[in-house]
Image (cartoon, rainbow, N blue to C red; front, side, top):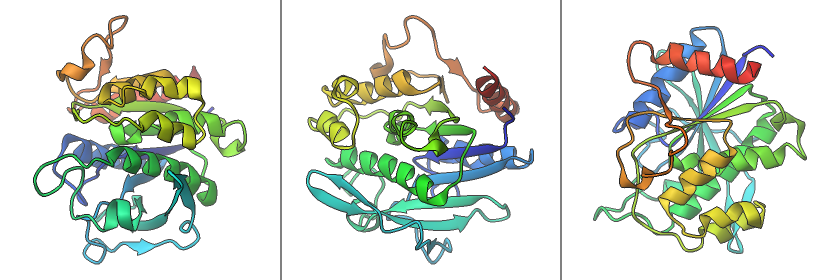
Length: 267
């Protein structure tokens, strides 16, 4: 199989958000791949700190209007699109009034406290990515997830292979970072089951921790790599059998990932 299309899914992307390593990596890697004549798309949450008018976001009606049902509440999907300045890179923003648009914050409130429903926000985003791809009818060869907010994407993607041809050929790579949190989410496993994840797969999420999300990512991605040297306590003993490959943010960054993509689809 030839490498033609890459979908990037990330928590943040510069210049719309530019306060993290993730935002910078999710910005430069897609452009590098597009410059190699690959067809690239990006999907990120539309946090309330992102100004629609300033960033020229507009809603894509044919992709919007879907509903993600969690805790007996229907959360409506709004999909907006923009182009990164001075590039041809299209970014699809997944939005919802209550979970994203109405909050002038990313993951923490004004007092620096982690939102208690960040688990719900993460689950909504991941499920919305799957639903949006079905409407977009765009089939990638590689799906590259960045950061913990994409934790449900690999397992939801693989489960979708049984019912939708669009999801059958893509290989999934996940890059993890030191963006840990200490908050526990007691309903995380229940949310996963509500989204259709099998109870035996959701069992790893019972602790409701950051660590359990990383374990889910590791179990269902075709390849997991680190985007920086992992020093957070949550990672201790997770990689006893094999240390994760580190993709350094240097001059060889894009070439290293291109080699990984090609090895995945040819393997």
